[in-house]
Each structure stands twice: as C-alpha cells, then as structure tokens.
Length: 499
Image (spheres, rainbow, N blue to C red):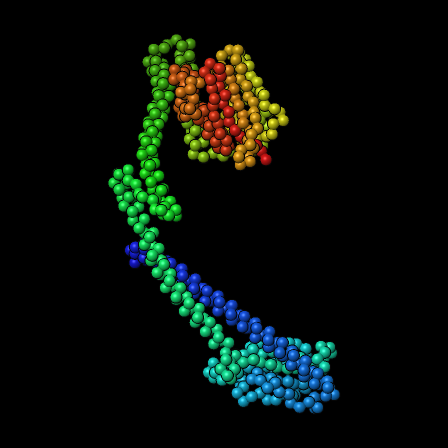
C-alpha cells in the first residue's frame, strides 16, 4: 500500500475519501450529461434536417408538376438560408442557385456529396456528416441529407431528381451547438467544484465527531490489553455503528472473564479425557501383560489353562481394538471427515431388522421388545447404516439397564419446526432403573459412565452415546434424554423427512 496513505490519520483518510467520492461522482456526472446533451443535439439536428429536406423536396416536386413536368420551365431554385442546398434532375443537371460565397467544401467531401445525390436518384435517402478541414476552420462542416424528388410530391414511380440539404456546425452569426455544449460543461464543472468545497467542510466536521469516539475506544482497548478487563467506554448518544461498536466493546469485556473460565473448563475436560483414555487402556494392557508373562514364565503349564489364558488375552485385545475403533470413529464424526449415504429410509422396516438382531439377547434376559412405529410413517432422509448403528447402541444400553420382566419400546411422532421443516421424532423407551438426575446432562459426553464400576467388565468405552449424538447431529437432527430413576428412560432423536 502507498506509504504516505498508511501514515495518515483516520480523519485525513476520511476527508480524502469523501472528497474523492464527490469528485468522482461530479466527473461522472459531467461526462454523462455532456454525452446525453450531445446525443440529444445530434438527434434533434438530424431529425430536423430530414423533415426540412423532405418538405423542400415536396415543394420542388409540386413546382415541377405545376410547370408542366419540365425542368426547363423552372428557374434556379433557392433556399435563401446559410445551409448548403442543391437540386439536380435525373440527368444530373443542377437546378438550384449556387451556394453562398462563404460555403466552401473540402476536396474530400465533394465526392461524398455527389455519390449521395446519385444514390437518391434511385429512390434512396442518404444521411451523413461532412468533416470539413482541420487546417481551415471556414470550410463547411456539418450534417447532410439527400432525398429523392417525386413528381407532384407523390412517392410513386421513379424520382425526377434529388435534393441535398446540409446544415453547418457553425452559422455565420457565430452560433454553434458545440459552444452551447461547452458552456453547459463549464456550468456543471463550476457547480461541481462548489459542491466539492461543501463536501470538504462537511467531511471535516463529520470526521472530527467520528474520530472522537474512536479515540476513546482505542484508549479503552489499550487498558484491556494491559489486563484491565473492568475497563468500559461511554457509548455515544447516536445509535450508529460507532455506538454499536462501543456497546460491542463493553459486551466483549464482559465476555472475556467468561471465556477465560470456559477455557479453563475445556482444559480440565481435556485432562479428564486423557485420564479416561489412560484408565481404559491400562486395564486391558495390564491384563495382557500379566497373562503373557505367566505363559512366558511357564507359570501356567496346564494346556487347558494355557488355552483359556490365550482366550482371555484375545478378549482383552478385542476390548483394546473396540476402544481404538470407537475413538477413531468419534474423531471422524466430529471432524466431518466422513460422508453420509443419504436416501429415503423406511424407519418401520429398519427398526424391525434391528430388533430381530437384538431380540435373542432380550428374550434370554426376559425383556419384551415393541415396535410401535406406524408402517405408514413417511420415510426419513438418512443413512441406513448410521441409523442402524444408532438404534443398536441405544437398544443395547436400554437392554443392559432393564431388569427381567421389563420392556423396550420404539415409537415415533411427526412434528413441524417454526421454519416449516417436517421432522420425525424417534423415541427409545425402557422400563429400566433410569438415570440419576445429576448424571443426565452428561450422558452424551465422551468417556462418561454413570456406573464407573462397570468399566472393566462390560467392555464399554464410554463413547457410544457420544457417537450416537455425532451421527444424529450430522443428519441435521437433535437428541435428548429424559429419565426418572426407578421408572425408566426415554431417549429421543429427530430426523428430517424425505421430500
């Protein structure tokens, strides 16, 4: 960027910006008005010249008819005006008074006029302009037109002659359309300079008022930079952007302490997550190490016992793989590095398939499964594999917390949002032990377990519900849980309907 501009104060920059915009607008206005006036003058001159030429051609045709339709009976015709006026017959003989002495044509324009006259003898109407001479200002220049002449002015049959009429750019009296345009441009320019002066005065006064508030904002920002988060600014009385900036600055300082607290909380969550990962990894790794050392040291010599120990090692390895797999999946879901295979999905049929998978375990535990989703429910727009994973996870959690004789029910309801979007809400209800109210807000947090004693035996990584929430969020839905201890839990999530 231009170095002097960078070193200027904001007030100077604003004044120069206002002035630049004003001068640019004035210059554009001068150009547009000048072009519009020039185009108007040219159009009026051209139309006026055509009407006059056609009127004169009509008069000459009537005179020709009244004189017996013979050019020899007609004296030389004159227009008695400073225009260039020429009348010829079909034999290219001149029948008009020679032009005034002050009408002089350039050598380049004479062939052009002759060619135009000869074309009008065939019935054509030719228009153009004579450029004159740049070296001699007295040479004739201006618009011209040639029109055919008909007997008695009737546009039937063949022309009896042609008429040339040319209008000069500058008349002998000194009148010139160009001078009129120059005067108009001069008036516009003077008016623009006066407006620019007013703009300068106005911009100086305005920028002083604006920069006064900005100076106080800068001083307050410097105090905040030094750690004085209690610093505030007095908002200006005007409700403009500067006033909004002052209010935003005060709101920002109010949020700083809250943000610092949130950062500390996030840091604690990160530490807790690392501790949870370490806790979940250390248990199977310790077991694997102990069993491996026992086999290596031949502490377990019985073949059957060695076989059982190997199975235990394999089971602990599976737990580790499951934990790592859940962590990888959670990372992919939260980072967005995965794609959903979205398509219309019949949720009633999908729930039937999922219940058939988990039904043997539930029947063995004495738990009743119910699919209360209406087969006529409209399809949702979702990834069938991901929703299957969601349902299996929720059903497995419900099964593990529902005693014998209980039941698990899946039902759905239709709802419309304030924006007009239609959603399907799916409920997974159980009659289990429920969730403690203090744990309910955290069940979708990573590595959270309501029952920490089950960590080492269930193989649960603590990421299941977090993965469920990430999948539903990726579909554009929401998930929530309601529970009453001793009565059961209702976990519900929403999915968009297929259009």
